[in-house]
Length: 340
Image (tube, rainbow, N blue to C red; front, side):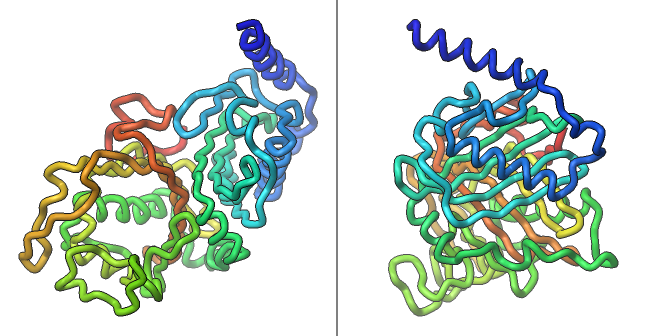
């Protein structure tokens, strides 16, 4: 009990002391891409060092890990043992936020994290949201790929750049199209659309689940296939068992590169959503047989109104879990939520 009280007091002291540290950043104007990426790198280095004192934080700092509000320096800060070799920064200069997808080492085991950082006008951290995906294979997959896909780093030609609202609108069509999927929606997929989930190809795969090497026919299959294109998966109607995609928070938008990062939850209710009719009239039963939820951070590359590259970090969560950043009502809603 004494040790716990001391740790709580330490967290409070660190937050207040660092919030009052002098800084020259406030005189330098908006934190640009390089500035935000520098803060993200500083955060990852402090995490591995297990030393929150290396960070400048506001006294109002809020920290969550997989939906749980914690003291900065708790949980992952105790078990982290090193950085991995895969890293992707998505910076939102207008909102003063950045999301980083990165492989790490926890107790020596490869894993993946998605970290969202928000700063104030003095470049002090005000919000830290971490999604920890305990996927050793996912980390190994990403590190085997080596570098983020070029599309995520490529600027969109100025004449083709869309507004923040339009980028979010297109990204949200992905979630709306998957939710209670009937195969008849408007699906804004480019021909080169490809998706990775925890580093694994879940579209256009050469080998499907179970080692299948022959691409199934969407018109006869009773389960969607990783070998299908983005469009084929959605038009099959076989994603219907994703009952609800909620707490859709679009917090980081990079207009220059056409990128959108959303944090959301995919619910599988294991009930009526398992029984549905495909677009061609076949009755199908598919999907999880017990209720559970995916907690997801998902990145979309949008150009000319179409979805190209998609990359997701995800972790299985208790059914109905919320993010810790929304009200309960918003957390259970499928409406679009923007950065505060």
